[in-house]
Image (cartoon, rainbow over all chains, first blue to last red; front, side, top):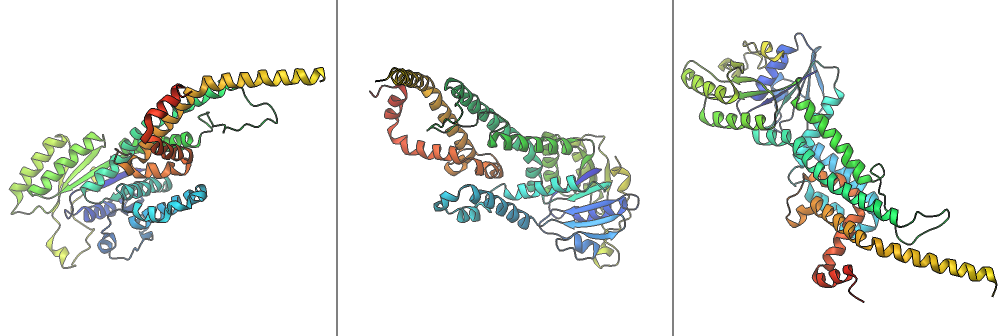
Length: 313
Length: 95
């Protein structure tokens, strides 16, 4: 299964081009396109209502939209439940209020995004292509970086936890083991890595994120960068290319959208500059979303330019 | 007094001395563990006091199991105003 992320500055035409690519690929493959952008417009492009439910558009093409707010809320509710089960005696802390604040804390939205991507990748094995239409650059880079940042943190925390467990083991050895039927005043703490709940949780999180990083950096995954022939779009795309390079995520295709006869020169300059940043071997496509589409004369997703050839990596 | 009960008492006294020795030997390590657990909790929940924090969801994922660590964290915060006494206690210089 191939996984594609369509990224770029807001308003460059990511969603439309992701839809176009999905449409073209779906002629010969089974494709699922998922919109992660909070400003969902996948439904508008295909002219159908999606509203948080998966929709079959044709035999080979399925559409889905992820409601990030709902996902973040569901996640927090799940955690609150575990917490209030564990900390019954700490009711004075007023966990509900704490969690209502947590909803707005940095990272929760990215986490909801990442969880959604991870779940989709894990569950949808029946598709040949998974296409994600991502939110604007900043958030996209942050959630793509999240697995690696998290693994670094988990490693640090696990190292400290291991020290704690080793010391507990030492203490346990010096104090003689309990005889049968004997009870002691002091609490016997767990010292084995396979018994300590925190260590077990850290390990399972670590494996999870390692696997996800592996998938994202792997040969079956690719990022498509969409940009326009203008300065702001160029600057942001350069930053995105550098960001992807830092994260070692594979860029597969550059698409320059809204190229017309009037701005051809600027388009060439922007394309050259981005190709210098991304490497000269990087495939590049010019697309001109046609004015006729505005008037609803054609299908938005059915563009004449061929994107499929470059996406069958 | 019966001979066997005297021997039993001797045995208990000796066992008590043994336990005391063991406890003396582990007391510093116990303190060290507590300190590590405190650091662990601080690292994980440091966002509340302005320390560089891991992604929020990592803290939330582990929070349900952090019962003991949070209690130690609170205890440490309470004892923080009297670090000298804490240190003397740890070194056994309070007798």
